[in-house]
Length: 109
Ligand SMILES: [Zn+2]
Image (cartoon, rainbow, N blue to C red):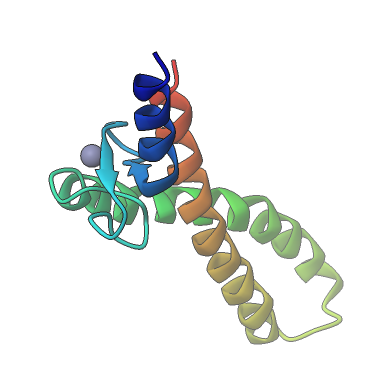
């Protein structure tokens, strides 16, 4: 009775579960975000929206902090656009992981 176990292990090593629906697909059938063909368009749309939400949440407290510092006037206002832009970019990058982690967490429940 070792055959079913072996087959399951084979599936475990050669197949990959889609991060959105949890179905196991053969290696290579998933895209670089580990989504299957059915889930990818839906997840991409969701990702596009939520990445900006996460980025905004990262930038918002930073932006408020800068607006308060601005009264001290130790840097011209435009100079703060660079770190703010960098923070937004960082939030955008983090957002990708947050969205993926969230979809994985929801699937595992
Ligand atoms: Zn899927």
